[in-house]
Image (cartoon, rainbow, N blue to C red; front, side, top):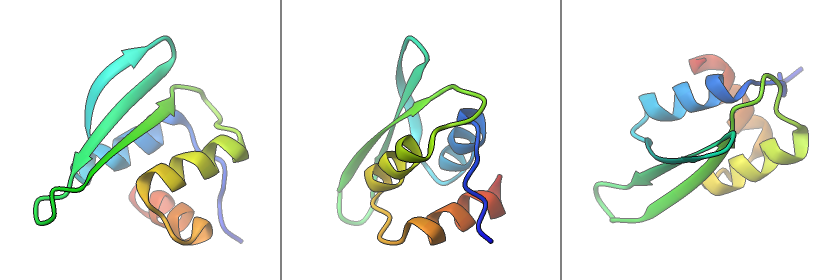
Length: 81
């Protein structure tokens, strides 16, 4: 079974370790930015700093990261958290 309960801190920590950098904070949300070194593609990801992120919000974060497979993305976050 794939873990789908994560805190904002866990997700931000994993994304930062893979090159995402915080660029702003508005209320309880942190915006991270990633620019692919080879293609120049830019991704902006908004992550709420909650203890438990709702499943719909988690899907949105995975989409913003460009994940093609939500469950695989959750496994990736879990392995690196």
